[in-house]
Length: 402
Image (cartoon, rainbow, N blue to C red):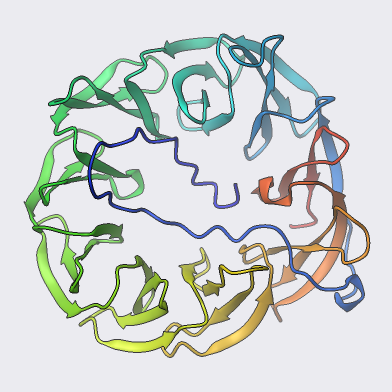
């Protein structure tokens, strides 16, 4: 996945209304002819073709690639391997006693978490030698996130009690635990050292990620959806949209709203995406600044640019000025990375052209091509790009970036 912020699958929460977390991932390619590209620069170089068949899952690190492959019984076993990108050599291979469809690498702890997308079973491996450090096999326990040397687990113990446990990533030993209402959505944001708990009743509690201490709590009442973005909690009801400052839930503003939408921070405005289009609300007071009914989603890239997309038919993308909503440039189908674009050849099936964007003038330069059936499955950790290939093996390519 492109944004490298992979979130492990969350357990279903038995509730009539569910909060929604939404992220836009701009994948695949820019549908233009190859001849329209700027002159190519230095070529990218393939450094690895991992495995003879397609991987069940893979994770690209700064200098390593981890892959998962099916075992003799693809329903209940797998193998995990590590390859070093500097040499292209396999360093280790470890069998895992359950299906693996997702890998998450935590370089701080030096561990790899191997799990299935919809199965709570998981195994934590030592990233350096593949040793299995600990397992999780309880059907009621799920890994919510793996980061900063910790794994955040949720156990639904009964109809009236759930438990959050932060564990040490290498040992599995608890750091802290807290009982929560089963009808609670958990928003984990380790980058801000916090966890936000939103109960169906409207009670909101913010915890410190590292030690579980309570930072603040309050009530938002009945709601349709809740979004956490930056230091704010956005609450939508059938009649209004309200912004609360966390952790004390101080009301910042409240405005009438005709429809529920997905809320993202977009610099000077708050982007609200719904079936009515994308609206930009002033971040300070909630006043409507612009409306783009022809677009259906908005997201802020890591470089600060705001990109909108359509959702009907062939996807289309454009970069906009967040202050005014003015379309600055049409992007077509573009991988939303400030330095990298991938373009689908209009003649050769499955051919993806890889381009680097010159930051000086924003012009793309073709550096190579990949034959793949799933460009949306690529991962990037500059200067490396990893993609499934049409031939089967996972290919890793070094991009000509200093």
